[in-house]
Every structure is written in C-alpha cells, then in structure tokens.
Length: 300
Image (cartoon, rainbow, N blue to C red):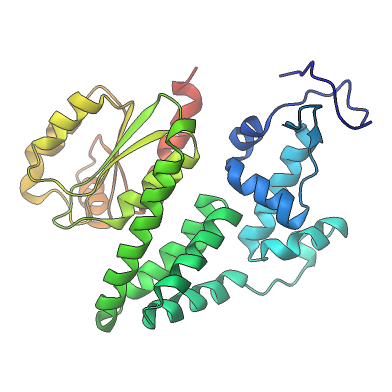
C-alpha cells in the first residue's frame, strides 16, 4: 500500500512501497505489540513516521525482523540483538549461549517457590518481547514438559497451568477487536481441561484468526452443536490418548465440510497405523502450523 500522507522526516523513500505496522506483522508473523516493544525498548526498528505519527515500514524492515527472529530462535536475548545486527554478524559466526535455557530455569525456580508475581512478570515480559511461536517453542513447552514428566512435580504443573491459562485468556481478550472475521474453533477432547488448546489458540490469535477455545466438554456430541453455533472456518482439536471408544466422533469429523486438524501423540500413532484420512499431528504446534499453512490458499 503506498501512502499519500506526508512524512514528518526528510527520509527519501518516495519510490518505495511503504506499509503500516499491521502489514509488517502479517508479513513476519510477529504481532504489533512485540514490534512496538522492539522499537521503543531496544531500538531494533526505526520506522518512517507520517505527519500524524503513524509508523510506516518497507521490505527492508521485513528482512530485519526476520533476522531478529532468527537470532532470538538461536538463543540470543532480544536485548543483545541490536549489537549483532550493527556488527553485521552472521549466526554461524557467533558462539551463542542458549538464553532460553536460562529463562526456563528462572521460570521453574519461580514455579517451585509458588511466586505468582514472579511467574506472572516473566510471562508478561516474554509475551511482550517475543513472537508467540518462539515463546511456546523455546520456553513454555519445554517447561510444561519438564513439569509433566516429573511425577513429583504434579502440584507445580497444576499451579503453573492455572497461572498461564489466566495470561493466555487475557491475551486473547485483549486482541479480539483486531482479529479478522475468520474463526478457528479449538476443542480439547481430553477428560480434563488442556493447556495445549489455550496455547494453540494464542498462536492462532497472533496470526490474525478469531480463536474460540473450549477446553472441556460435558458431552462429545457438544462438538457438533458448537460447530453449528460458532460456524468456524477451521476446526482444531487436541486428543492425547487416541479415539478409543470415540470412533463415531472421528467418522463425523471427516464430514464437517471445513478443514479439520487433530493433535496428540497417541492419536497420531493410532491414525497413522490406520492410514486415516484425517490430518493428525503428534505435536500440538505442528497442528497449528498446518492450519496456518492453509491460510494463503483459503483466504484468496
């Protein structure tokens, strides 16, 4: 989109195609709140300003954001990225100590001491500074797995899930007005409420989908009432333990008329052995990637 609004600076970008922050967010997968934080706190971005103060970006900014994300995914703290960009270092040239491992340990320590203020502060800090995909992959998911796989840490796991769910819920609510009309219905088919559908929803929401989360059901038949009422464009469900006696549900899911993606380790193994027509992923976030990859073709 080319702007006709005058610039407030003397930057000579007259022949460049400039676009607003929402488009930079769509091009890079990094939400607008995080992009603004990178600009204000760390000076990582320097957008052109219109006379009214609106931020405008170019394709150079897209490439810079991609570079920033690559450094973060390598384990570099966002506060240290600017120096590396200024020095034009490449990832292969730098010996990076994994900042995410340190962050995991800090979070685990706060959880084990039941320090709700500390846990909340760490969550808020990282959700504002990093893309949701990065936070999930390098921080939240490893911590949840470590707690879940430790039989003596069940109280810590329950405590952390409760705090984390509150933050994800608030994030979803705060982003509602900016979301597109395209809806994704996320349903946990587990016996107990699942944190995974909440994290899946947070990522989908950051990518511009209107996420509707149902983390527990009174009856499996409620799935179809929900689909009829919500009328989602996509359906994503987490079922860790396989369908078992829910085979009738699986057969009905095949005929919904919208993209259906499932996640869960045992479910994936079960369906893979049966060569099922359903799209099933062992990792809950591979299922989200599958949905997001469908977006360009489905939104044409």
